[in-house]
Length: 172
Image (tube, rainbow, N blue to C red; front, side, top):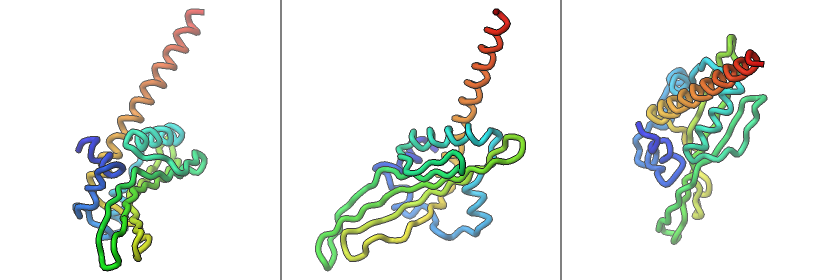
């Protein structure tokens, strides 16, 4: 899975879910949780910043982010198309969405639950259609793989900062 796949959710690609490759609403609650949730060995504050970076790197813009509650919502770039129906022309826009919830655990383990979806709006008679939750495993796997890399990089940076600080204290 390439970075292009997650970006296609938020950009011109909307293809991951418009082509019908994913199942919407077919997963059981335990299967959905397995797909959307991971426990990561890092403090909540570090995971929060990492999630924000991964979302931004993939074309999502945060619409709400609260480090205290660990809740983040974001939207990607919408894709519009014009359709012709009995009532004339109408514009349909697909808006990629994502919600993330972070929860502190014991021993600096943070639980991350992410839900990718899309909402569709039409200028015709149908208005706003219900949001569809995406259940394509590759989307979630790619997100969590990128998140693990981001966390690892941040942890390495923190370790290097500590070594520099300790080294400068010894020299003085």
